[in-house]
Image (cartoon, rainbow, N blue to C red; front, side, top):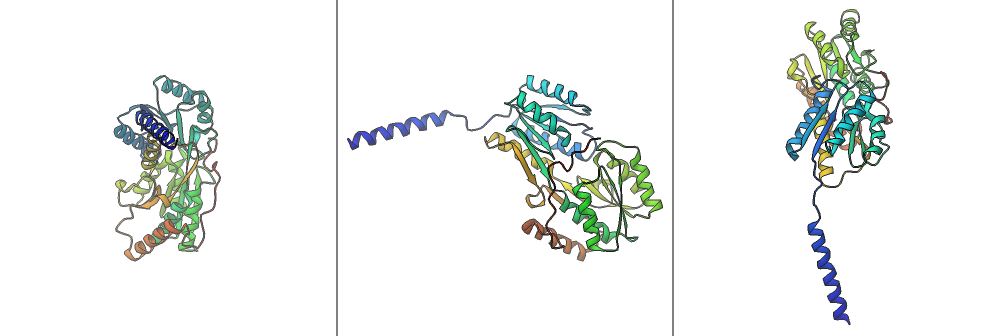
Length: 333
């Protein structure tokens, strides 16, 4: 009797092993879609997302479909319908503007996985990737305050409540408590004619000598004004050293790595929807590209503080970054 039971168990195990051997080990990424409300050539937000998806299609030999400058939910849904007809596996939406429409589209297309930045997931096939921006802003503010001679810093931001701007202000005042930070908001993530005007006001009327252009759609315009007026800047989203030595460092977000990690999880059958938080601790956000003009003692101190933060999540002021809800970047234009 024991022999029969043992034989039965062995047979069941062999059958199970055979069945498992025929199951697909990976989930094929047939095609990838990328959507953006702005241009992919903005050299900051849109460009970083675009480069991230290009890496994915090269790695997985997938087809690639792109739609940019989408200005309404209907335009986004039309693009999603087109992607569905082309059997797209993953759709990346570059920003919080995709929260509502992606959560809605997820019900219509349950086999498609939707990914967007900064917001809240409401479906199992939607991944909301939230980036903790306060800390990178804090260290950027420390650098700006250290390099400022007038002790007046200027910020051209998109909306009030941006974590990286709050961090920039606190970091600047931590480095030099007498530092004054003046913030102008263009009230859009896209292009604004006010950006250059505000930058000139900060430089000419307020004597700001280090500018932080924390709005991707106006970043290039602000940088042009800063360069022409021989002032300094903190880069935004991407390492902007390529613009010139006036960029003394950049608060960066490694969107490319983030998107690749999502694709790998999908490929390995490990991708689960929901809200995910990333930051300096997992190398997604950072302060990079500090120029050689900054004195080495300060750079070493700053590097030590950044390394310590990545391990402990404690900032140089002995505090943890404040908690922001998943709607921190969701503001109607």
